[in-house]
Length: 75
Image: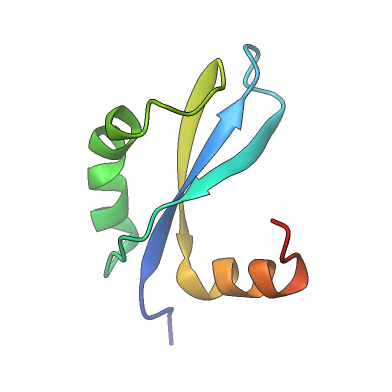
């Protein structure tokens, strides 16, 4: 059985797009990865305040995000 929902994680990257780190995880929950992907461009534009040369998005199962936050609360 798959995850209950997906979240969109925004990544801040250097100019080469090789070194990226999680900059923000949006509160919106998506019922599928496809729904998350469909909203990505709009969300990237809406979150252009992040201070990185390149901002990218990644749709992730919410249970993965929760596990990572539990193991690394400083995130």
